[in-house]
Length: 126
Image (cartoon, rainbow, N blue to C red; front, side, top):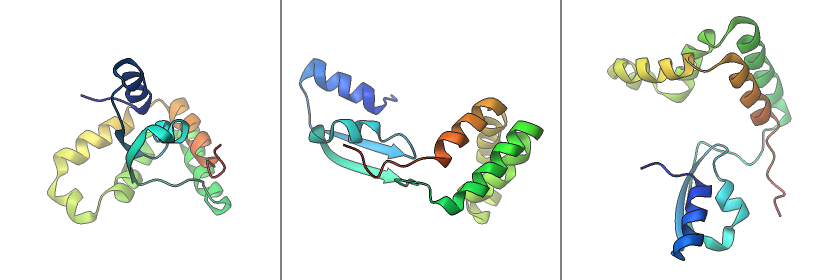
């Protein structure tokens, strides 16, 4: 079963159960930011609290490619960033599946998410 942090918070409110564990990736750590008192443990994977200014050109280029050429040219470089060469070679079926998910992303959606990620800064959350 998949459940996001907001779902966990809703479940907590309904049942009164807690504290809860959340597994977070990238921007998915919303529950831990908005209800830290309810958090028992937090596992963060492949994430940061902010994008440094030097990353802006990288994101701008990805946005340009998605907007002008579509998402297909971004598939292989993304797989190369996310998976080691040995894993990609040993698991072509996984690469095909993940590559298909990336390829199926609407260019406007990719660009919109890239804009948001490029400006990420949650270092001063109250």
